[in-house]
Length: 85
Image (cartoon, rainbow, N blue to C red; front, side, top):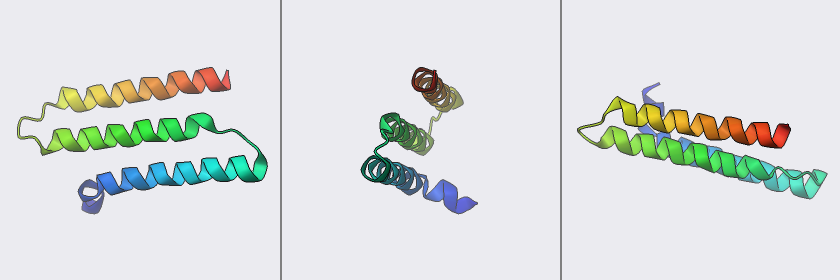
């Protein structure tokens, strides 16, 4: 599992790229609009990149990482409530 910590940035980019491909295929094949999928995946990828940046600093405070995680989770939940409600 050490490779996950080593390649977090690449995993975040792969997740974002996969979501964009799924969004495009759903639009072209099934005529379904999955608009928030790409946006939310980019938000999660940006959160992972930010956390990865915080971990590289020597004075990494855990509240910064937890703050990014909490804000990202709140935005995902609010967006899911708006689009699914």
